[in-house]
Length: 508
Image 1 (cartoon, helix red, strand yellow):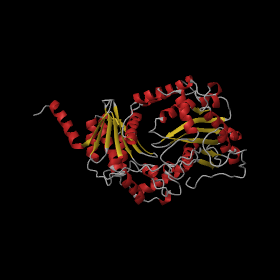
Image 2 (cartoon, rainbow, N blue to C red):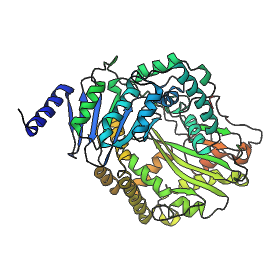
Image 3 (cartoon, rainbow, N blue to C red):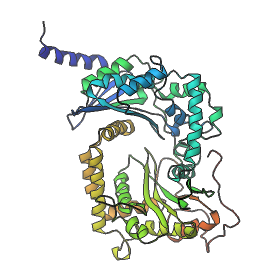
Image 4 (tube, helix red, strand yellow):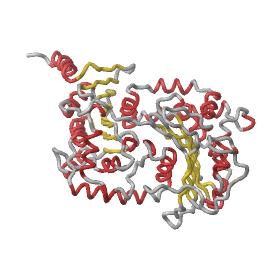
């Protein structure tokens, strides 16, 4: 009889030989390994041991891949996760997940469908079985679809009342008019009654193919992860060897005005909101690190904050906006990054009587990122170093979470097919200079980003409140030298009291 010590290495070699194609990747970190099955499914693991494990699956799907004429399926399919499958009824699936601790999620994003969970090490096999069943063999019943559509209808109506969720959606609609990243992440309410079971099943058939899936695990030995993936997905035949086409991102920019939305509760203040964004090159460009640093440097938050170390109380939007203007309720920078495009800018919420200065505040702060002289408000070595330190600190603290480390692992392989380590990221951040930040800011804020698609360079503007009260936002942008615009220069602000201006498109 073979001893246990002799048998285990042989079994491991056999697993690798039988389950993997010729594609086996190695990384600088010996705990990280990746194997590609013969059907194209990728398994990447970080086997660093711990008291519990994190598991995830990342599918090349999401709202950017949808038919512009029939949006919303990613949102609906997200809400149909963890229900009936070929092996389990909906009730059985819920019982299984509850016994495993109930720490699981599914999230539809613009360019990915994410399934994640964390369990004790002894329950890895059981949880992966639930994930695999949800991904590969959903058995959508008529009752589940009806209930999901009703839930989605209520959810969308609630989102419309929450400006922090609603306005970014409208901003994307303004930035990428009816194409790729501009398609709605949440199902349009008028589409909900029209969604059929056949549409949902066809969505699954189209995108849920083995070559479109990355399985990631943290705290699980690589050979065991490969064995699990092979047992659940090894016989899954792909109907196509092609991965979904990202499509050509056409950045249009433009302005959308929304009517005033009263606060949900009577004791909350009345506020007007505005977001101004500019196109960036996205995740796969090294400008990402400079933009992330600029986001930390601008910072921002709410007018009320408990403060504390690392809160960003010395960021520009705190010291120069929130601490200076009592009428500003909220002001912060944002950086939405995707594979081949992105949006960088500032969002602000103010009392209605200050609506006319909201665009001026945003544009003034953004224009100072282009200033060369620190005495005139340009970037200083001190604040840049503080922003870089805060960014590095955030990275290091995030990867202490296994779920954050899991998503980083899976999404990097999904987006770029390779892994950029934390050490490599830190090295790139530390090399950033004041001049680097100014050059990237100039490229982005003056509308000179170049992508494979159309890049108009025009700022994307969303405002919620009385349109006339905001004044001529384009005039303010031109005054500060931000963005590109068609037509001759404006000699004076235009009057919007007649209601002139773009309105939100029908879908929301």
